[in-house]
Image (cartoon, rainbow, N blue to C red):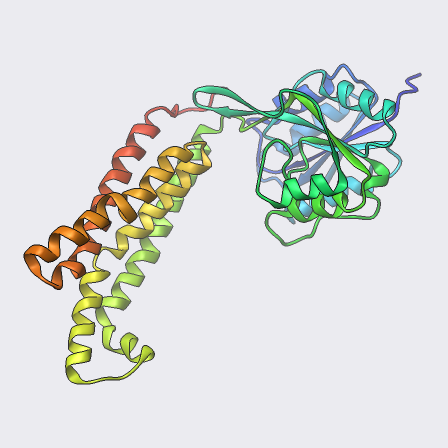
Length: 356
C-alpha cells in the first residue's frame, strides 16, 4: 500500500484530442506514484472526453468528470472539489506535458520543509527553435512579501501567476477558488494564495513543458487576429473619412477655416489607420511567440525610425503640410516592415504540428 502523501493533479480538458495523450502519459509516468489525476472534460466537442475515459479504465488513479462547457475556471474548481482529501494539489493544462521526476522533487522538498507552502519549478518554453528554459539556475526561497512583489512587478515564468508550474499544500489553497467568467483567472487565484503562505521555494529545474508545438493553432489564431484587426480598422477608417466634421465638433467649435483645416488634417493623418490595426496585431503576435525583440523593433519603426526623420525632412519641402503627411507615410513604412518580418518568422514555424 502506498503511504506517500496524495498529490491531486487537476487537468481541465477542452478540445485537445491531438495533445491529450502526451499530457496524461507524462503525468501517469511520474516517478512519484501517489497520484489522483482528475480529468475534467469541459464539454469538449472532439474525442477528448473519450480519451479521458480510456485512461480511467486503464489506471485507477484517473478520475474523469464530464460537464457542460463553462470555461477553464469552472473546470479547475470542479477538480478542486474532488481533491479535498489530497495533501498536495497541482495543475496541468491538457495541451502541455511535464518532466518525469518533477513531482517527486517538489513533494520531497515540501515534506522536508514544513515552513514552505508552495514549490515552484522552471519551465521549458517550446519554441520553433527548440526548448528554452525559463527558471532559476540555483534554488531560491521567497518569503510571502518577496513572492508577492515578484509576481506583481511583472509577469515572469520564473515565479509567475500561472498555477501549472507549482505544487501547493492543500492548506495553502483552502477555500480559495478560481474566479469564473474572467480571463487570466490564474492571476487572482495565485495572488490570493500567496497572501496566505509562509514561504515559497523555486526549484532550479525544468518541470513543465509549455507550448505543446501547436503550430496549426498558431496559424489559425494569427489569421483570425489579422482578420479582426482589419475589419475593426476599416470601420474606424470609414468613420474618420465620412464624418470628420462631426468628430471634430465633439472637441470644440470654430470658424469655417478651423473645420476646413481640421477635416483635411484628420483625413490625411488617419489615412492609413486601417494598416495600424494589422501592424499592432503582428507586433503582439510576435511577442506572444517569443519574438519580443522583433515586436519591439516594429514599435520603434513607426515611432522613431520612420516618424522622426519624416517630421524633420518633409516640412522642409512641404511646409506645415509635411508634418501632416509624415504620420501616414510612417504608418505605411511600419506596415511594410511588419509584413516582411512576419513572413520571415512564419517560415520558421512548421505548417503541421509535430505529432501529425
